[in-house]
Image 1 (cartoon, one colour):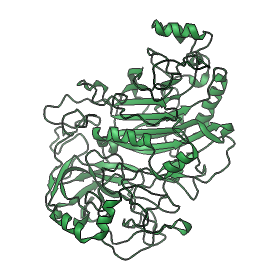
Image 2 (image 1 turned 180 degrees about the vertical axis):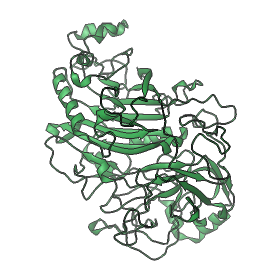
Image 3 (image 1 turned 135 degrees about the vertical axis):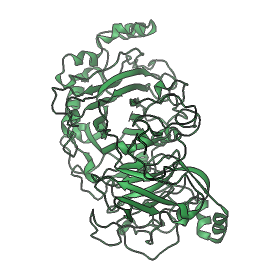
Image 4 (image 1 turned 30 degrees about the vertical axis):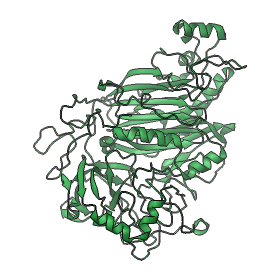
Length: 639
């Protein structure tokens, strides 16, 4: 797999020294175009291809049939497949269905990242994609990625899920969604797994209506799914081909006369008769039906059942029409437009009885909100520890939280908690609305490498300010001597396994608000929520989350990970796990951690002992605790 960056030759951007604080994204201090000329343009570099100004979104749906993931998904995601940049995406949404959700597998995924999510993060990280959000409901998973330099312009990220299996009590069927504001436009991605079988078309319609009616989001903008400026609806929708028998369907496929099957496709017929589908669009089905295949082959079902092929796996979209209610952006005359660039299946993947389907879209924005809320300034290179100073400017409209922090990331990081080191964004006033923080010498990675700084907003649950890549070149002699003197460091190197339980009443450096992770289902009783904790790949350094909910402990030495990075520079020690969740000392070290993912059992009221924003580091974590005593409120002076 190619791992050379965005255009396949070298990393994006150059060095990050911008002198005085950078101007808003796309404007240099002299008024000339900067390295990021437009909010969706690629970072400039030597001999780079012409940059584009319109965002491209790739949507993938795949019923993986409880299979283990393949070794490579490069072609599925259109990563470095050609010199033509037309297929390169700025955002990628991946919807999976039937991920193995047996009880033993779900318990394992609650401790470790599920293998499918790891696969896509590993594949996309080298191409500068960062996981923006993810939601899981039993076997249905939705992952949303974006290029790291777009993160400052993605806001109000929320998720929701709705069970429709067994009358709303079981999550094998239903829908999961991620919504967000991208450059001022409200987007929603909805991944569904609807009931199977030919005769269940009406039940599929009822389930879709249930999902649309029950999923609601916080905020004054778009509260329902169809209130968004743009909705992508995709998944294993399970619509079948009526009337024609198996032999005729296979004949039409073999003779490449697919148009003869289109008029009997249940979803195509429903577009003309179901009011709920009004406005949804889909590209032509110029690829063979994607279900049902013999696993490991490209042959349609040869079992005794001999299931009739069907286009069960689909990707549709809907743009909010001017007459469909007020625009969430508040700009009625500046609605976005969508053009589908491609729509096809990938026959080369044979691990499941379904083929994955991918579609590429170009979004045409009439306006873009492209001023970051926080602008970071950093030197071109850190060659001495005293250079590890970060200045940043906060826009007056930004509501700072006392849980905000600034993370140091290696180029190619996979998610917001995949940091090498962090420092709390305490306000050390420099000049007016300009502030600065300093990384401690112990927290800095030793050796040479390319890094990025990002400001994480607790309120927005995302990085709202990032720098261009810059270099760190620090001597490694101190690291070698400290590792030989410290028995704790050597024992840590011997154990690079990952384990992290999410206990109640504990918050991470990327805490999502529980109200943003809800599950509504018809007739569903309240169940205690479960959260699952993903782990980063072993090649990355230790990445623990500071836990605001802890008791103050004596000062301890910084905990150095495999890359020499320390997780913070606070004086506070590790938080204790509450009650019966305390563990004996030899708990394995935790590597880079994701924001908490969620199983299907989440308290619909948003208040349970387990939740996505309630985490507890392993007891040997040396992460600082920004909340040393109870009662520190949002908006206080900070940790």
